[in-house]
Length: 203
Image (cartoon, rainbow, N blue to C red; front, side, top):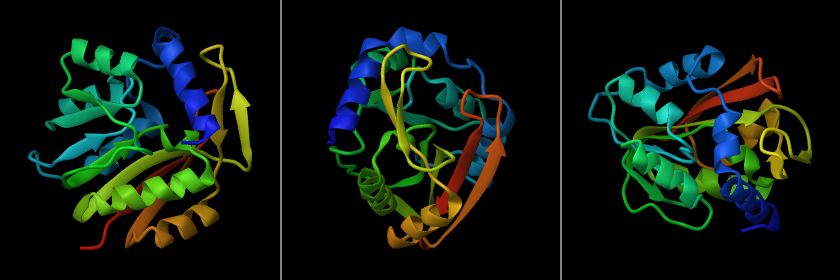
């Protein structure tokens, strides 16, 4: 892993409660619309994996729609929170760990934005290979250019990499996805401009 990813994971590990306290506790707005679109047409038996589940907010919403998501996080403190809340959860690092089964949907809200562009491409390929035929990989990114460090929200530095739709499409194609939608949304969050992506594996 890069130094930036290691440092970001340390920040999360040291500030689990700060992150929980600073994050909206319910799903709403553009995020809710995106999750609803992500789940549309999936059977209740769909195999769903969430990357970076944190304290389980999105997993709880997905479960309320009749699904049973498998939660993961690279931060042990978040895995403990998830398990205490009754979620099936395990420690998993998308950069260093491999998946040993296929999924109909892999979901990652505000996770891939912490990866460098090389790490991002690596994870895209890994997730695409872990999808069942016509499976979906849904993820969100902060829209913009370049990269930065920010201590907002948790009081310690986290690395962020920003994306625009055009270069994102190039990387999605190189990773082997057959099709995708990229919806830009302006939100009320500290960084207002986001990209909500649903990428489809070949049939």
